[in-house]
Length: 513
Image (cartoon, rainbow, N blue to C red; front, side):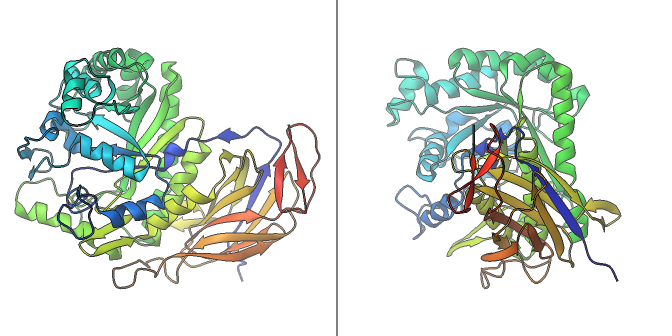
């Protein structure tokens, strides 16, 4: 009889740690379906304030400690002109990306005010489809320059005399793709980004600048060779269960096979960056297990199909386990991945479902909350040895893990993921080869079925539990679950410089040197 899957996590506490960027817990809001209108912004709703901001949405999202929000797209941005969304006199415009009319009542000043209420940094993505580098620079002038210039004065006339100081900017969105309005060849894109970056940097040299890319040598290398010296990040995207033309999400095991793909994309992009000789980071600024329901063909039926995104029964433990695996991959590559943005934040595959009467925290909401609130600020060097499983024909490690440590407190927090649909996994945790004595407490997200989900009628079917999960370095992780574990250390380590030693009564670890 099989003993079931097992894993060993070896933490090398004396090796250098990496301080990761909290921007990997970033978010994304696009003018698509009910993300903005009927999502974060709903004037006239009894749940909204006088500006139209849904207060219940803001309250829920604050639980995620969101560091940044990317806006307004997405494909939407490739035909969006920001001037249509400022000032008192606005007219609706036709959204050529999603083939609907946008009222333009939620524009730049509204988004920046909403970010301020949320406590998140704004991240503005510019129109590189039908737009021009000059239009991008004008937008930057509007948000960041002091009064005394044309667009800064326009901002002041609109009631905002002080510069906003928007730090994050991106040139374009998926301009490599045939589906994108204003798609360009690799050489066209390299030249375009170079000139746009020059204009943006000369308008405000303090910004952090990104450009749309893909983890492909033939596409990204010309971009980096030409424009890399102006860029801080390259922007890549990933949706692995594509639903734009398919109505049924893949099953649990198929989703587990997809958990390997994000790390491959990161590794490919790292290789391209090394080949370019440029010093740029990676922004995975759109990611999700599943794409959005949006058939590309024209017609009312295709637009109506977007309502499939509201089916909460399709947001299961598969989505939660995948999301934790994605974040683990980013943390393992924390030296190169400096930003990641789950796409989107609300509705349309987002962690938070917003409806006229309230909000619902989907399974992925809890994963994002656990990682943003419970992990420590530095990534420890750790090796994970795990049994494997057959995930719809793909061999996949059952257990994934990442170990973190507090730079000031020395507390150790370990994120563990069990991808098995049916079996618990026994995990052994070692620090510098030794089993840490004491209790292992955890915040555990699990359920009685891999297909479990939360609904408006049953909002807490899947929710985190606080419990003691193990003892003396041994943990039993339930099937299809995510846990963030904390160690109660009682085994002293040497006090050599760069090592670890016990502090107090053994309730945590303290970094020495």
